Amino acid sequence: SAVISQKPSRDICQRGTSLTIQCQVDSQVTMMFWYRQQPGQSLTLIATANQGSEATYESGFVIDKFPISRPNLTFSTLTVSNMSPEDSSIYLCSALGKAPSYNEQFFGPGTRLTVL
Amino acid sequence: GESVGLHLPTLSVQEGDNSIINCAYSNSASDYFIWYKQESGKGPQFIIDIRSNMDKRQGQRVTVLLNKTVKHLSLQIAATQPGDSAVYFCAENEGSDYKLSFGAGTTVTVRA
Image (cartoon, rainbow over all chains, first blue to last red; front, side, top):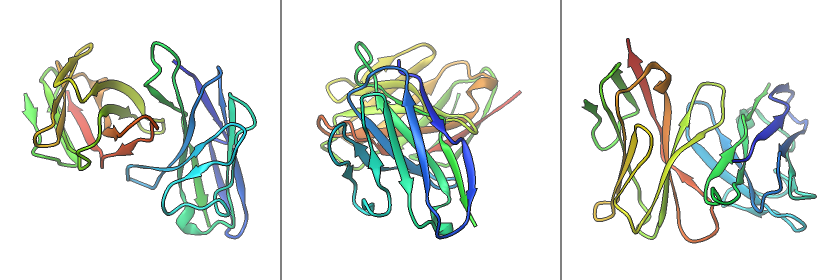
């Protein structure tokens, strides 16, 4: 399995500002993803964080709003830009496991963001 | 044991009883399915998975059943314990991109 940590665990931000969330995996992984979980709701995939190339975004999510970096095989960041109260959510990163759990997707604890 | 209908957002279970959580999926091309457990303040935790070439898979105290004909997935938890109280999500994936689509989730509460 992979152990995933996220920083910060929570934050309260003012509208119009940006926040960068860090995701660290304890081992090298092939694939990393970012999800959003709005209060009381399910998870929605934002993008696939690709190592060495631009992230692949899902419908409804754009790079200008959610720029993502993945400089190596253990680390990724998600920035929530020009925040509004509608961005208040839990943001989770995940990573694909290694053999024999290579199909399993492990999740970090999440970053709880509140935008005022 | 107790079970929900096709999907209900909450399930209350007596400790020691069996639980059945249901999930309907929409993409007939999905070939990989996973159940996750999410406790309050934590990220989802992998429980069990199943591929579309199977209709049943068992783990420790859990069984996943897949009915591709009606696009239905269920999770059975045997001898439900207080530590099983959480939100349970089914997720599906099509192809090899590992991108997951999550269901709405069912909140399970275990009564002592």
